[in-house]
Length: 533
Image 1 (cartoon, helix red, strand yellow):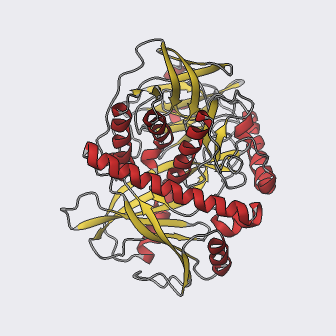
Image 2 (cartoon, one colour):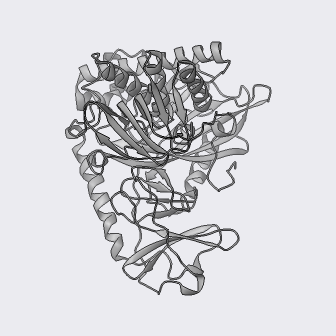
Image 3 (cartoon, one colour):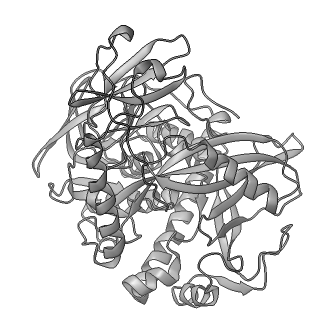
């Protein structure tokens, strides 16, 4: 398994791309557009706006591609909810809009890929492919004929087949979606960054945005390196850091897991593949090095609510076991990694004006497993809104819409979140810090507070408050990524308490903890629940 020096997983994209680095913000700055976040949402927005001649500045707490874009599987494929459910929830007209927006997103990615290949010499491996949805007997959603009819009614080029051609197992009936796509997401970001600079835009890494304030004429972004004054601000941070509650009741964070196994070149068709099971799996091929005799079979799935599985390594094992059962030619595991998915309550992304904010603050979130597609749609939509142009998808993806089409999921997620606050009344994961093994973390009770403690390989202790800086849930240890994850709203922190993923705006509070003054014993906690996407 490929892993970074700090113990976090490394995707095949992170292992095979060279990303540009940028210095932090040098001080206070005036710009027309400030984009917060240097993933696909932020860089696509910055590219489109810079290309229109706007003065654009991009900032990121870490750097280009350091967030979730590098942890995707980079499919450009049908909506995660499928057209039959979108039609049932939103109507046939909305399903047609979704289909049209998805097609336009793929076209935009393709055109940008061609541009950066021609001008900057960066090949992001964009490839048009057919995608297949299948349902093994007795496992999950079965009505593929209904999906086929709904997709056709939405204007999608689909075909109902007796099986997926070229697979080593009998898939049973399948829907073929023609002309979908895949690409290398981090090579794409490298090209976008170069294109933004070419069009006059500025990018700054190592610049953490803490606060946003302003009015319809000007917004001020406070960072750890100065203030940015801008006419427009785009929140492209996967989930907004400036909203305390509004958006975080409408979506929930899930961890998703990916295994990459070597397969002989040519042993499998180059297609995209998804099933409808529970758990479900999604599959593609990647060719890291055309000179080698093998591809990487990329298989993802096994999702769960963020912060609600302290030791999720078994999920990699489950994916690998499923893969070997269905693809017996699969060889050695080359990669294991995980990523974060924000699931909107009704299945559609939140793209546009940020609710309860000024009209010059925009939001791109709620990827629902279609991050590459939704982020591209969001960039197009936000660019139109900032320019005062009409956009056909504005109402469809409006972040201020009520979750009336997903009330059951909404209620379930809120109940799950509220239950997590009860953990402040329980004991710690262990009674004393001496019980924490090297390379592991655990929450320890200390009187009325809880402390998140990590023991490094040398035996040193790294202690921070277990209280998430967003809305105060107690964080949980994630042994697969060596991080502290919030089970309420999906904030994540490294072992020193630094923010890895919002909405938490600030790091966890440092705690001085001596080995010989460990917190007293307390009651042991009960079993934690797990969510499934």
